Image (cartoon, rainbow, N blue to C red; front, side, top):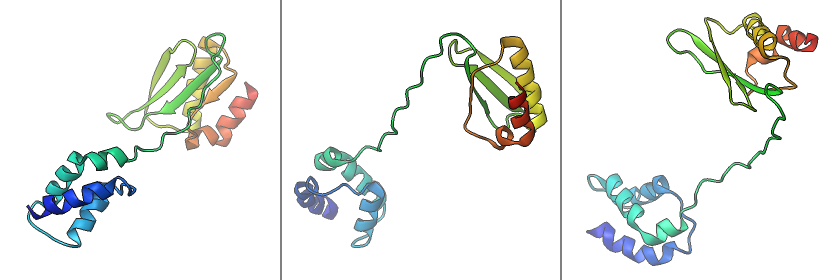
Length: 151
């Protein structure tokens, strides 16, 4: 096959090149030749090419963030809304120390509803020293900020 002959020549040169990824490799091949199932053939060739596999770059990893382990339960909690599920919004609060999870079924995620959930959690488990979240709008609302300042 034409592609196999040309790719075997490129195989020796591939180790010295930065691997552009399967999508770019297919685009390069299609800019020069075409045949039915060229994409699948190119994927097979690239995935079986030892040089391509050797120089293929893995995705860069995110820096690891190590948290200080809380000395007792409910000092640091993490909270998040999981999105719409069966017309409800599961709101999850997790204690970092014990991994205990509280899940609240919410019909809406207003600041007042969030305050009501946290009021129940704080009465039940005590006030945490830290509340971590990915920062959805309900956590930055004025009502919620005022509630945190009061507690």
